[in-house]
Length: 215
View 1 (cartoon, rainbow, N blue to C red):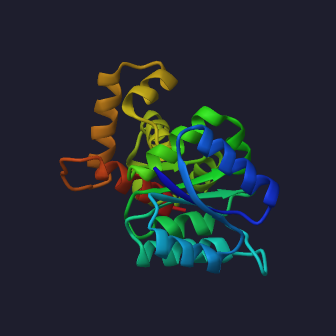
View 2 (view 1 turned 90 degrees about the vertical axis):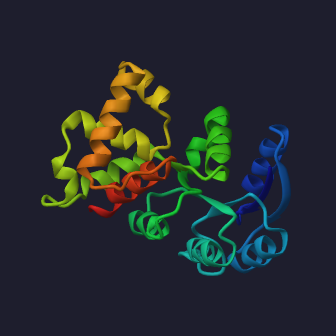
């Protein structure tokens, strides 16, 4: 699996490179600004780009702007945002195109190597991986009259774990439920959110988008 990293801090950039290579990823480039990221990904077309939100020169939103550009120009490349902060507006904006292959993790999650590597693989495969803190903050801002009001408290818990990118089996373990019970909750959630039938997991991504937009 081919990876491009965009991170301005040399120590973290090198650490991510070593971590991913130690776990059998092919890091084809590691750059430090948004312009270099766009050029590199456009040229190499990796499976995934791992991007810090705040990159030179202004350290405001260059990373997310570059990520949005990549979503348009190189849609086959997944994007995993890593940030020191929860940027709610940016998370919602990145997910607004309705496609998977996107993640948003806080940098301290990188310390849990197994979970981080799993998130990279999941996002590169077209799934989502949202940090629990991102999910919690976005959930707290939902509108009182939005479609999420149709969900029961347990269904909201399940949807929050879907947003983090958890499988039904992982949700079952977290909530001490059977996989069958989780499947029923997921079906109920998708029905209440008026999501269309589908033969793949894209409806789960759409549910995540609904979850994020209601804030």
